[in-house]
Amino acid sequence: MERAENLWRVTGSFGAPAGEVTETETGYRYDGGGYRLEITRETDENGVCLQSSALKNTSDAPIEVGCLLSRFVLPGGEYEVYAQTNVQLAESVGAWQPLHTGISVRCPQMRRAFGAAPMAALWNEQTGRGVVYHLFATGAWEITATREGAPGGKQRIGVELGLDPRQTRLTVAPGGTLRLPDVLYYAFTCKRDLDCHKLHAWLNRNMPRRELPVLYNTWLYRFDKLTADGVLAQIERAKALGAEYFTVDAGWYGPRANWTTTRGDWEERPDGALDGRLAEISGAVRAAGMGFGFWLEAETASPAARIVAEHPEYFFERQGKIFLNFADANARRYLLDTTCALVEKYHATFLKFDFNQDVDFDPSGTAFTAFHAGCAAYLAALRERFPGIYLEGCASGGMRMTLADLREYDSFWLSDNQSPYHGLRIVRETMLRLAPQAIERWVVARSAQDFQPDYTGKTDKLFACNDSTWQDVRAVRRSYYKAFLTGGIPAFSCDLTALSDGDFAFFRDCVEEWKRDRAFWQGAVGRILCDTKTLLALQYSDEALREVRVLTVPQQILQKTATVCPVLDAQTRYTMDGETRTGAQWMASGVTHEKLKPFELRESVWKAV
Image (tube, rainbow, N blue to C red; front, side, top):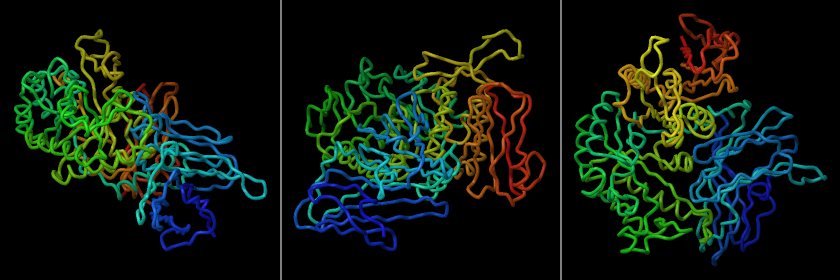
């Protein structure tokens, strides 16, 4: 019989659950006298389980809650733990470490992936098996894995996930219900990629993306130093490239001298960077057959903004920063009305939401859950008004790139680091916790004419931004850019007129090929076949492994050849490069690439026959 203390760590004015629980058709229930705890579990054919938990006040008086964590107990043994740090310009940096005593992975900030990503994996070194846990973070959160005492003087492993106990002081009214953050977990056998294809398949079925688009954004073109004529010059090139949305980023509103002073008012001005011509730009974008979008940082405001003076009750101040109080219905209504008016005025079908400020403690005791619930309500109301609108999430790169955010946004701007070299690494590790369909791949590049002697027969060289501000640049092979673009959403943020004819044609061909295969990418799941200092191999396929694509990218050249073995269905017959074999035969032999060159993509495609 399962016990309550193995399923929850929930404490408050009512005490803490202890003792046997009742098993139900879908999970467990515990009646603690004045309160009830329930778990519902739904498991798919891959063993991926979504656990939803709730605390209900069954008494006739309010109860106080100070700790709200889901709990899992694993047998004792030798374990390693995988977690990811997540900071600006270094998103999704993961590593394994031995579990000697315990670890804590936490994010105390308002942005739900600041400092760490809400996931952790445990690997049992004795069994060669692991379990990965993903938290749908509804506020500031913590995940811990701890060696703890077990009966008989032995040890076991306790894993706890939920709201940050340091910031949780919640009140539940009589008859009220408090939901714990959902937990998604499953077993894995591949330590290299945590069997992430199982997560991708679950997300594709339960949280499907709308049709994946091709994007253009002005930010890395000239940052906020925009001119209307300069933006208009990008529109025809974006159309020729195959872009489907064209977004004007920060700097479109407020005075040209310092637009940041009017954050919160969100009004275009005739003395602004675009001279009041945003409607003209929107019309040109739509005439070119693309959807128009603009940038907002809805969570924050400037002290000098008019709305802050008129309605200070809509905002709160923390650590010298001003934030919209999403928990206040009137504040949400102001923001919703303002946003909807802008969408209608400029006929927008795309919004980019940024979030560049943060605080690290919530004195209200709600661990920022009230803030995030209000933000989710605002976005839901926006979608209700404009069902077809595309919502992009961006917050200093990956600071709110989580499964909970995936419920609210269609896709994420991957990082402030615009290097394809760093970007492919971030893509690889972010695939362990998000579906590839949610990850935008931004091309930030320009061509240099006559940069080098004509040794190779080329007169131009493609350069990529190698940081977030063009202070560092690096040459990049076209095929490496294709490797970076493949699998997610193709996106461009640069001066398209600064690309040579050859480089522009290359990117246009990449977009055309991606569009032909869009249906495949819409439902693809990913695997990491090889991940070493010298070689990276990524596999994308449909869930049934009827079509399999493998991208092999040498990072350095220490060998003449490289053999990569795909994951296929052993009994199915596949053709690749005109040769047909069973999946078992292909997996045994793999594919060998010869005459490797550094950072040059090799592609292999298997199709079931």
